[in-house]
Length: 444
Image (cartoon, rainbow, N blue to C red; front, side, top):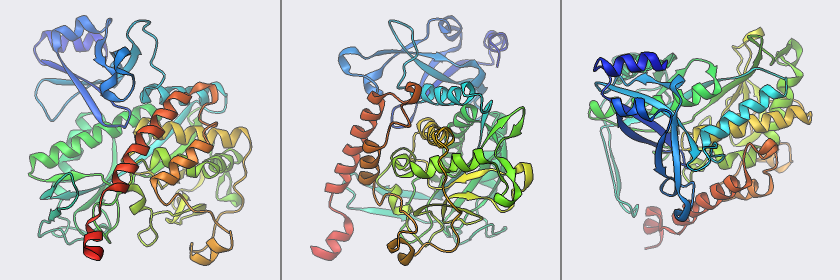
């Protein structure tokens, strides 16, 4: 929205509050709610926040400043009189962009693609999977966890009504997303029998799509709450049930056309696409530290539920880390990166994927021939494939050794990477030291 339009809505009383939204280091959505008339006066000066409370700075030097990106503004359809705007983070004294802020990092990764002359846009299509429950109860020790399952939650992949219990819920979500400016390709019930759903967004430019993901997660949770439900994007909320993925379809475009399209004999991919895949696979273990950013992530990355476990690429194979969709032909071809889940910081995760792919293009990293068949113990033992990390600690150790592809042109600062590793190691150690309920069953 343009400033003139916002000003008119504020003066007419249609906008009473402006919700300035931003993310903390770990990717959780934060906001500052501002009176509409004050927001108009504050656009040039920004809004001060405490950076130490969001994981960015030390407490002794914690003043940072939020500035709204008006191109991201939309009327919040879930609340009356609220304008939502995503913000960028700046140093409070110099007014320079704060380099460790995830949205700024993604901007810099996109800028690197453009300045290379290779492409003008990074195009992204995200797939959001989530579960809906009637209620969930747990305590912080983890000793008591129970799910209250809706009796209707007994459907399966693409099942139709009346077994698709949440068609109306997803449709309401789509209505709100449309009013928010987020385009949805389709929605359906997912494989998980206990209320698992998927909403697939339409292709868009990477930064706007990262904002759209945050809006989508917000709207999904709001609608679920309104209907007396609980929504979760947790990668593996239920034992022995499919997990929640957060797949990304990606291609680079120039002059409005994909530069991933190429030789039909080579899965329809150009050399650029092959090298981009090569970079992602070369750095896949380090990437896991950003795109599988929780201890729970690695309970999903387990064979048997179409989740990738091996560092491979293949045509139409949902167990591959990078899948070439079998139905995407000719100039519609894209690549799908399947390991991510929604515990990632969307901005940092996307930036890391882009940096890995661009490293592959720059250094002409050949991923070899596409993998055929099924990943099993034998092909791992014979060294035909490498595996993704088995836990968050392995991923963080991989990032410690393999991070230079991220620091090109200072897109990721070393300080940011160190902060991320430190924060995530604390999460790992906390969960690793906590007695597990199954341990009581086996050993008490």
